[in-house]
Every structure is written in structure tokens, then in C-alpha cells.
Image 1 (cartoon, rainbow, N blue to C red):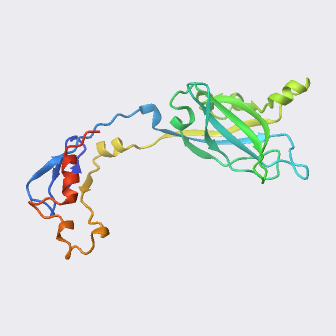
Image 2: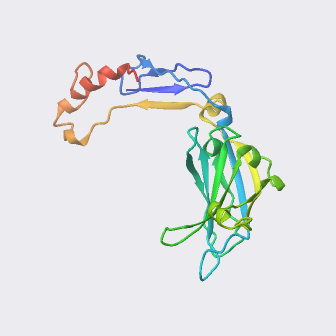
Image 3: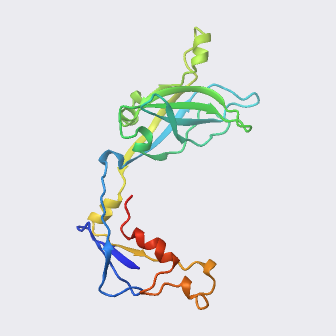
Length: 235
């Protein structure tokens, strides 16, 4: 049908006819409109460790992992990341992981981030160890005394007067990098070739024996009846 070439400074590229159409004939226009949110381009890489977590396994220690939740505007929380399980230890060191900032806090650096710590069980009934809350702004401070968190089990805290915590979690490292977006590549001079075509479906049989299933210029088959009205689509 045609091919469109996107240029870095042009936003209305012409859809030029390819070898399957009429050479030199303009087949339409593609309009590209984009809005980029600057604070959603960053990707954060974090690493955590924990110390003196509660022992949950009868014949061992614990198999801890962490679950990160992003807070929503309605007060609910959505899971945005799970760490791997570190087996049989109360002092785990989890591998560093990368996560888009928008997935972690939806671009709001002061929005609460809830972290829950569990002991992994093979049957899926993971034991809750405790939780803590933080924010992207606090995490961005990097490794410091600000990023040492007490893991608290609310039920234990209510039942035991002398209860302090169920261990601590420490941020070991924090880095953030901007991820290149589609618009960055366009501004940098990247050209994209966009091709539009009609597929000859096998359900029509052999095209040599079934002319109505083949596009012939100047005529209109069943495909054409459906496709022609969408030459100027409105979504």
C-alpha cells in the first residue's frame, strides 16, 4: 500500500506509494503527536540487605524475600516488585534490581512506598515477618542512616509490650539513570520506515484460482469494501 519515513524534524510524513502501488502518488498522511513526562524517564537501581530477621522455619532459619508496593491515590497499594528468595538465613543480601521510577512511585517522589518482608514457604503460605514504609525521596539519599528501616510486625507489637522489631532492612546502594525514549531517538536523527500492506490470507485458497481474493487496481473486492472506509480513520 505504501511506506512512511519518519524524519527527526517532521511530524507529518507523507505515505508514499511503494512498488505495489502507483509511483509518485500520495497515499495519505500520518500525524505523530507525543507528550513526554520528564520525571517518568528515570530508572532506579537498588540493593538491600537485612539483619536479624525473625526465625520462621522450625528446622531452619528463614527464607526471606521482600515485596514492594506503590501507593495509589485512593489509599490502596499495588505490587510493583518482588525480590528473589534468599534461602536459610536471617541476614539476607538481595541482588540489585532495576525498576522504572514511575512504576515505583508514579512520578511522585513523596508518595509512600510500602515494603513487606516474608518467609518463603514451598506451599505458598508465606509467613509475614514485618513491614516498613519509605518514599522515593528518602531512597534517593542513598546508603546512609536515613535508609535503615525497622521491620515491624503490627500484631506482635500489639501483643508484646517489650517488642521492638523483627529485624532491620538497609539500603546498600541506589543509582538512577535516564532511559532513552522514542522521542530521543527521533531527535537524534533516527529514521523509521513504516510499511502498510494487505495480507493475502490462506483462507481464500490459491490466488491464481481465486481472482476475487486478489487486489486488482481499479476493482474492489471484499477486502477493499472493508479497508477503503478506514483510509481516514478516526479513533
